[in-house]
Amino acid sequence: MKHASISRRSFVAGIGAAASLSQMPRALAMMASSKFHLAVISDEIAPDFDHSCSVAANDFGLGWVELRTIWGKNLVDADDATLAKAEQVLAKYKLRVTDIASPLFKVDFPGASKSKERTKEGNFGVKETAEPSSEAVFKKQDEVLEKCIALAKRFKTDRIRCFDFWRLDDQAPYRAAINAKLQAAAEVCAKNNLVLVLENEYACNTATGRESGKTLSGVKSKSFMLNWDPGNAVARGETDAFPGGWNAIPKDRIGHCHCKDAVRTNTPAGFEWRPVGDGIIDWVAQFKAFNQIGYSHAVSLETHWHGPQGPEASTRTSMAGLKKDLALAEA
Image 1 (spheres, rainbow, N blue to C red):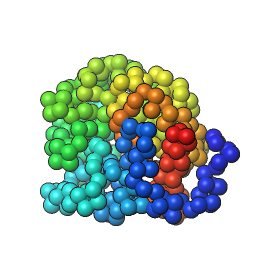
Image 2: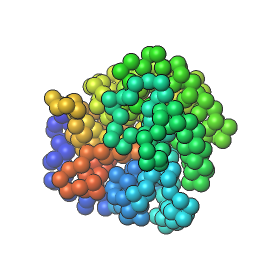
Image 3: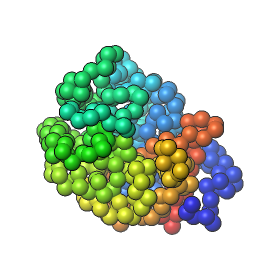
Image 4: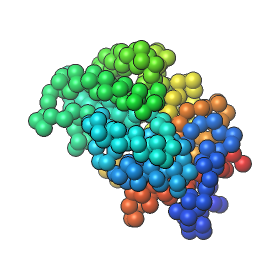
């Protein structure tokens, strides 16, 4: 583990993660010399959106949240009344939205074999109870994109997160077609003054920093950027996600970042999530690198690690780790 002289366990034990976070003012969350927006994916705290926003604003001192699910429902499936309620909650806590963390293109690619990485949830953004064909799912994504554009405008954000389909054993025969679909979606976003940010996802075709560099070179749209996630890169086996994977990414194409931590293991999955600061990612160096390039978009905590006390406590621990590493980067 990194930073052995100031371990996560000793930090949490010494000051108490929850107590320390509740005492941190909003100014600390933003960090004076950092230009990016510190945020959290709200449902990583709890399904209840109001409670999650209260924790984000009042305990974490944040001014931003990332929206994925609210009250247990994916944002793209929420009805108007639920969305209106979410708007009221955001206003109550004076929170702004970094992006719409949509499930766009986290589906099978048509004509390809079913991915081994495809999760039990199947194809995201598709409501049918019966298993639809990959072609039907693919066509459905145009509707998902339209919903995401409407959501982005409603929640006053210029960013929509997407993926590039469940990972294939051999993506080479399909890569040009995948890139063409991403390019077309980015062009639709551009017409709406929005940016499409591709998350490098360990279960999808662009998983690592090096793969991200290749995908960005193949999708030229200026409205197509990367949601850089070094934790996902580690999960796919890129143990040098920073700096190795990072060095492969064109810095002017980074439009969002997810912060979590992981270690490689001798398990069937090959990895496990860890609290921020307890894995192999050097977040202090990553934050310094963001400052060096003048990064001005969001860094959003995506906890993923679930400790014995549950998601909220785990997110509090990881947010404490994130802020500690951020403070070390600013020192």
